[in-house]
Length: 68
Image 1 (cartoon, rainbow, N blue to C red):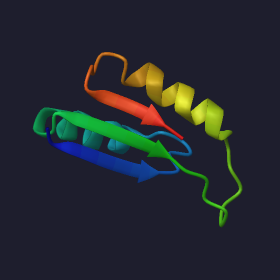
Image 2: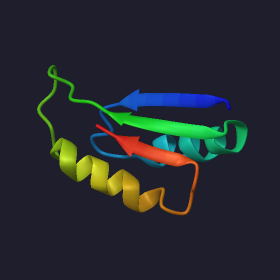
Image 3: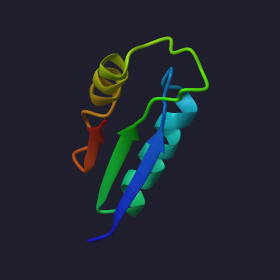
Image 4: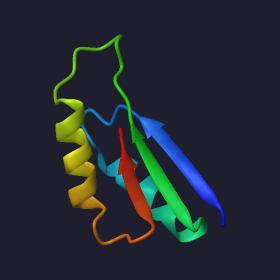
C-alpha cells in the first residue's frame, strides 16, 4: 500500500490545497493530511476548525484521512 502524507497549516484551506489532495488521492492508496500549527503566524482558524473544514471538503475521497 502506497501512502502519502501531506502536512501543512491549511489556514485557510485553499483551492490549491484541494487540487493537490485530489491529484494525490488518484496516485496513492491512502493520503493522510496532517494539520499543523505554524507558530510563526497568527492563526485565522483553530486546528480543530481546520480539521473539520478539511474533513468536510474531502468526505467524497474515501482514501483521504485528516489528522492533527
